[in-house]
Image (cartoon, rainbow, N blue to C red):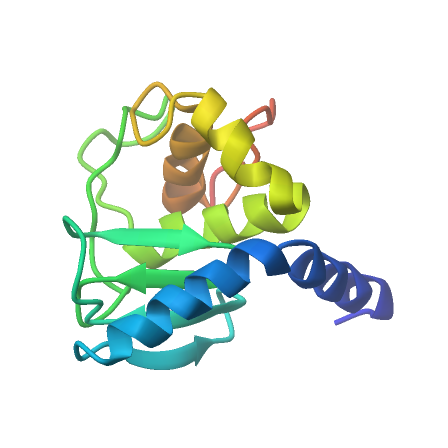
Length: 151
């Protein structure tokens, strides 16, 4: 990994830190209810598995992913169809949440207000559609990316 890329990652992690701290506090509280913590190098995130509260799936806060399951490496459904992709494809939840980590690293403390202004947790939210696209293709985690490539 190049020095410039490492600096970009460190800068993104620091920029997302206010949101990450909220996730770490929630995750620490969840540990009292059985949540388990681990570092996910590939996702640049602290993972809290078996998070005891919530409707299911996962919630990303900065570089912290809280989820109710045993692993992020499970198939998940899409929020909306992704053009140019197999409609029967089932991406991994880890890949979807990694896109949100990257989005947080770019927008930092502005992510949540922008995300909520774009529709919150719904298929019409471009951040969710971009996360689905990234989970399916490995590209296009930013909502306003024009170029969609396939693996």
